[in-house]
Length: 380
Image (cartoon, rainbow, N blue to C red):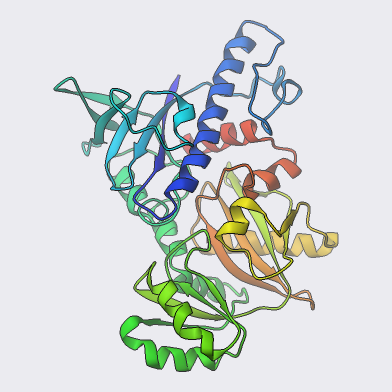
């Protein structure tokens, strides 16, 4: 049985989201293990699953389900690493960091060891793993820092590597690369707090409304839709709270669409395109995880030809940004049918309302099967 370290939490403003995503992933591994045991015994009863996961009919007799030993590795808000050996239900409620269920842990940087050093009862022990699945969002997890450490330690990463993760966290650099690949991108300007006066003047030239964003942050944190110059100072202060650089970006008319991309045996596969319907404002943090006034339509309410163009554009962006494993590519679709690149999520959410699993499910791959495939591809 292969051991998969599932990293959750993190020294990030998106800590809570990671807890929800990791809980779903860890439950999927539990379902896969239970099914593998039953399947080996020729049993025909699928174990109980979480709502929204695969049913017996999806996995029954397929022989494709892997058998994995998930190793929960929790990272506190302060950035301390632990081996978590307690009840999985404590993860989403953020009560997981308790003794004796947590053991201090760190990466073993000897590449030949492929694992972690764990402190237990005053002694250290080596915990070998076959791969790591970082279910981390935002800085210090999705930005290449953790991926680089894992790669130095010789541990295969399920998902994107160091370069792609770092590149996609920087909105401006990602746009430059996509533009170089022939994909339309919004006009924008980047500046620091020290350059605020000049930057605000340049931002105004983009026209209103426009968006002010932290250059390197996720989950729409720190983003403001600015409808006039009087709202610009407050928007800049909000963005600077999340990063030392901000980007002012023109608003593209139309609506946001997304495409889940999965790399399998060197080929790029896509889920169904989704569409975000907004009643007001924009798809901010609150809407992403609670859907109070917005709706996600999957498949998107567009014609087949347009959907095919969006999928092709997502694949082009995936290759241009050196992505690997899987990612969610977000774009804008204008009333004229033009496609603009927005951003890439190299570790998309795996929560109840997350878009990546929804797009995969619409294309015929349920949640448990999706986690199984992502793991197999990462090990391959």
